[in-house]
Length: 271
Image (cartoon, rainbow, N blue to C red; front, side, top):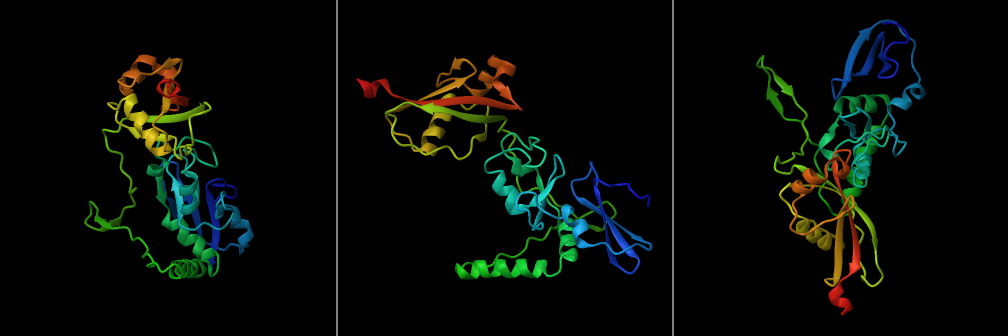
């Protein structure tokens, strides 16, 4: 091994005797590759490896290490899932992970997690105990760890394949970004829209989008919803595919069809 190589994407760690392993993440692979070498090397302090096995969101050791396939950054599973509830970008490099469903583009990195558990003494046992206590205190059944199902390879040997549990139906071909622009006085109480990224069929109409907003926000029937794309006030009968085709690039942002919506008092209520 040449000193100084694989600095950014590799980690060297002593595992006993003259054996050491290199954690290497290739741009063409979404998982951590581990290569074992036998050579004399100095023992490495855990503090030297800590930057590589910490979650940049919670600042703790990686638990259920989960990698974003678009940029290969890794976080705790619970941390990245919670982050994607409010954003569709990687919290480290800000790349768009997916227009509307970033959870489609994450994978559990079991090899990296095994390495973290080997490096940090008693971490796995503490996590298992905390999880067990959490569920028992609430009278819930302790979930069993998921095990990847082996599939036969071309050579007839079983091979573990980790695939995303999320699938995008092909008919959902339009990704929406719903941006709130405000509400006039008198529109009543409403709940903020929790998720502004939505993936829908291009055949859906603005009328469908309005119904979605009303249901999710708990709007008063007397409240009117105005939906705008660019400078165009949209009509309920217009389909999303027609709008994307008619307005073109001006309607798009990072592959998303951007719709702005506002709440106003219905003219019927005023009269």
